[in-house]
Amino acid sequence: MKRTLKLSLLLCLLTGILAACETLPPPKPIPPPTQAVTLDEISQSLTARQGAIQNVRSLVKTAIKTKKGNHSLKQVLLVESDTALRLDTLNVFNQTLGVLISKRDHILLYDTGSNRLYRDAEVWDIMIRTFGTVFDFREYISVFSGKIPRLAELTLQDLRWNSKTGTYDVSTVDPRRNEQLKIGVDPKTLLPVRLVKWKDRQPLYVVQWEDYQETPGQPPFPHTITVQRPLRGDAVVMKFNNPVINQGLPEDAFQLNLPNSD
Image (tube, rainbow, N blue to C red; front, top):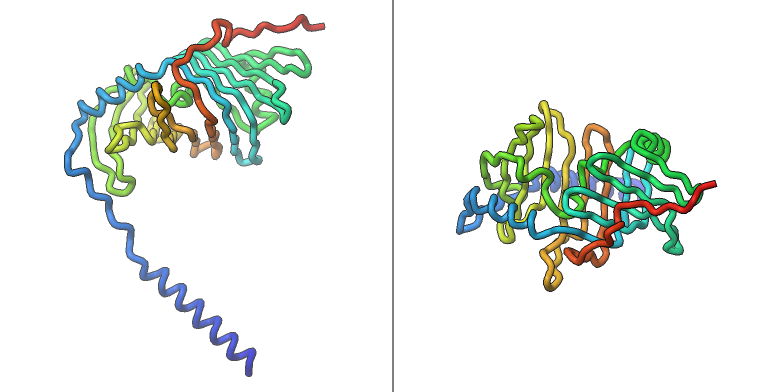
């Protein structure tokens, strides 16, 4: 008798939960700001931001997520304009395990343990073996400094309010690469919060700039940056710790002064 009563109560509870889930109202659309913003105003704001960030230096926690598994890294990130990126991977004692330098013309990887330097295709092979995927960081140099890749080359075509996300969506095209981009912009700050890039109707990657914070004398900077590639099923997430903006970098920051190998 008691067992039958418990079973009946459980069935009633489950039925109630399912009924509640079925009757949940859809999320209400977010109304646009009372004072509308023009496409030209957003263009000017994005262009000004591009010029406001010259270089970035920060300790980052990097998560690499692939179909084969997840990896967590402690790194030091250096970015110079849109031209160069450096990642020093550290161990638990903050000693350098490896250095990756990505420039427009090449990519280098130095393994401190073996005192060996790898270049271009060799680096891709190591990434495949280690992570099961390849990230060409040359494409994301601007992204990880909080900027939009090739903004100066883009043609801004259309501006619409996105009632689901509460952002302005700017449709653009890169005529030289035959790529389309959609840039999500915060309506209050006019800072970029999302970027979707695709080509031939195939998504290339999605960027999220989140947790913007302000430091006196520095432009607002996102403390979490995510790059997702839907077709590859992978992602890179960088969480920044006290990033330093526009304070300059060493002249040899993107050169490898290697010890003599055996």
